[in-house]
Length: 117
Image (cartoon, rainbow, N blue to C red; front, side):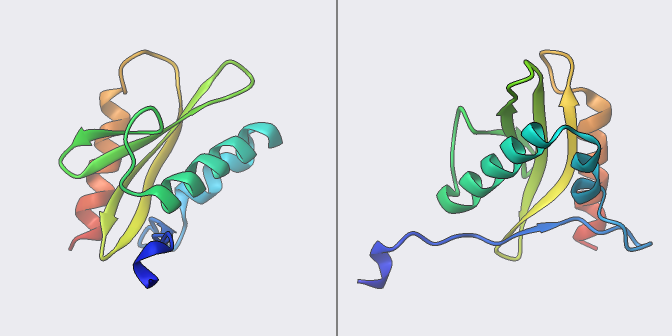
């Protein structure tokens, strides 16, 4: 019967060589209502992984985005990967265009590469 209960995949935050956790620090500058919405969606992704649209979308090369529509009419994205049976939050940002900006994707790819070394 153990297989019947949902399993939560652990979420960890990418840590730089200097020891900072940019994705954990990023939301601190956002309004509380936005921080809570992002946190709630990350929790939903953990409990339902692997989860598809509209919450998560694969961006290729093992990177996924968790999509949060904010009450403030803005959109937040947290880019993550799966590493050693954990979800790892690589990068977070407020999305200002329809397409995920290349520079945000580049940050996530660079951090994923660092993680895997």
